[in-house]
Length: 442
Image 1 (cartoon, helix red, strand yellow):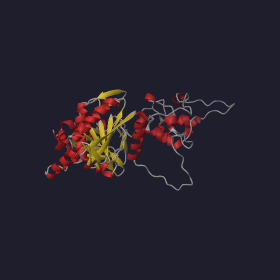
Image 2: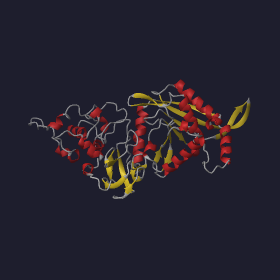
Image 3: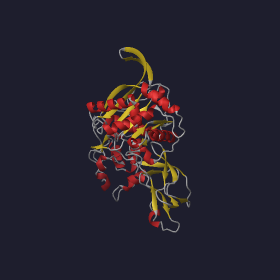
Image 4: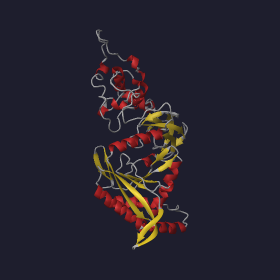
């Protein structure tokens, strides 16, 4: 049967992706699992695979097109198969998806201009009747100026674009869409009524004004940087963090690591400190299941596998691909997969399933000489471990002063997931695993 290739969803907050390039031409034979295209998401460039075998009969989205999640981008079928039923389905762009939600009889949002909206009647003049679709925009279109804005604003991409075009501060627009989502009509109704502050009149505490006497220039923000800014602002404002910091004696681990690397096994990459930390975290999540959880969709979810994201620096920002079921991998296999993920992350060769599904994350800045820092929990996860540099410093052993190698690490936890005492026990076990590194090899 004919099969539609659709834009995959890379994480809970992804709404669209862009076609980078097609790696297979129309009319070519593809097998299930073949890489057929490269797409750009806010997080990374991802190769997508064919989930059926057949002929790539039709490409529906050309390079550069931005397609909503779930939108059709190509058709795979046999050479003599009728594809008319699926061929007529146009690619679903984000704006097209928003327009499709309009009730019958409403004007297309993309064609609607502010000049087309009925303006309020002047005093003493006859009121201009509004069309049916506009009546629901009249009440409470704007929020009071002093209403606090908390968390991420739910708004359609088209609504955000119209807000930028019209100079509307979207955070103060009341949404009338599903679950309070702000639509393009809501933005245009506010612009018509003049009932909300524009971006130029920045509210106190949100965005600083640019000093015209201070030389500067605007910088074009990449999609990845936009995604990082949005997700971290959301996380920092909606997730109640608490932080636990501990110091780890690393002498035994560093000696064991050196011994393993001296073996020179050609089938195993050189082990890194991060490999030991990932293994220790996997064991910790299994021993303390209350930490292997996340607060998602208004409910607490507890997971069974130790799925751990690794923060990897890339030119535009960072990505955090996921190592799945770390508790079931041997130490050598875990290290091999971690090094492979990091390598492919730096060359934009990650697969869609590798960009989602993590329950916690590890961020190591030790190679940059950072002693200690705290990371922000990613929405959809319950914690994140921030790791500093392994460094030599004075320590006390058996009552005598000596030089030892130590490492600081800070565990950031969503307070909705667990509490301080439980988090401290889990971090203590994680420290024990690193101070007794043979446990990571079992």
